[in-house]
Image 1 (cartoon, rainbow, N blue to C red):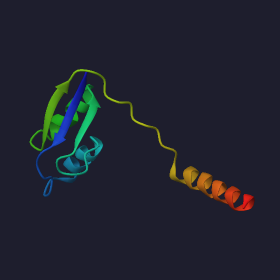
Image 2: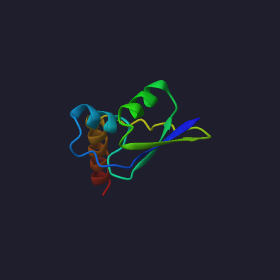
Image 3: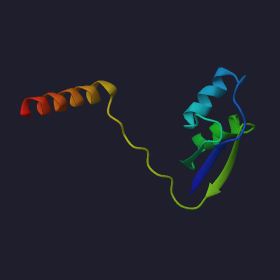
Length: 89
């Protein structure tokens, strides 16, 4: 099971705690939707900002989040690739 969460109201004027909750759900812009795994933690976050979002239960599984490399590591790898490209030319 998955939950489709959509930000339907503006969060301007909301407390810092609510803004952190919205950010934790992965919502950044008005009208944005996210497909999240149905867990008690996610349901609790949705309950906290229920007046700003809509919740819909969807059959199927939510996509697994992609793991990202730390910024430092990604920059080093890009620099090495650029240097290797420059040395070949």
